[in-house]
Length: 387
Image (cartoon, rainbow, N blue to C red; front, side, top):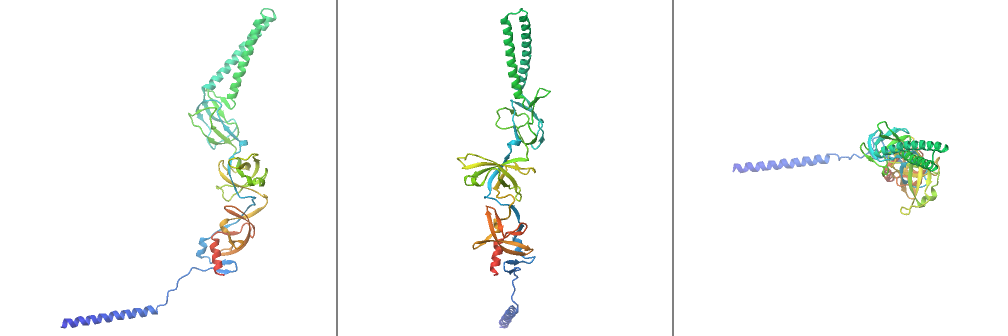
């Protein structure tokens, strides 16, 4: 009985404690002030201008770059490639078959006309040299026989037919010597016999060895498909472009062009159209045009891809911005220009030529101003939302 009463009392006390704790917690929850969410710093607006504090997180998502001026093009950029200027390039072949025993020129090496490139051991050259010496010796001997025969004939000590036979032998030896010497002259046009019986292939022009396609021990032939060396003056290169038929009327010989390559994205090279083919390629439907470029800094390399644009006027230059910097509202185009750190102004511009990557601005922007090139659409949304 006593045990039962103790259990009832314990149960009542526990219930009172639970009810009291719940009431106290509810009272405290109601009395606590509501939590305030911390927002990002909002931009202030004034007409077409956004003002951001220096620590605004929105600025981290923007890319702002200064604007450069470029020559105004006539057309969109055309795909082209850099090529050797054949007027300043020599492709060196061997004029005789043989085996290379020594090489003294390396790719990238500066050479002068007449400098040795490699030594070649050739039985054909040795046979040609021997034939030339024999022909010269035979000619000398036949000439002496003819001279003696003529003297004997003059004193009537020799028959006419013997004199004619001696003269015929001399003429034949003369022809054979000319043939052998002509062959050696052809073989030795760029070769000079060395002291050890080998001959040396020499550089025909001044320039830089841009390609070397042989090694010691290689066999060379005069009818090889590829040259042993390519020597060029890298200050002069060509730009080869396949011109669409629709643009033939906009490009002429002597016209100035601008050239851009991926290796130097912010640099424009200048060239001039020198040749436009007279015939249309029936497969590609293109006219091939050739442009001369002054490459004095050696930045342009043969076989690099390039983009060229015919220039309207070499003195006329327009600001150029990436296409991502532009956005439209209705019929007009706009950009955001940085007035000062954190102050971005929406500005209406007049657009000129637009290609796949860049847009030329005719009015509303000047070279040197800083433009938002990434994030302009987000800025415009924020500006419109605060209007």
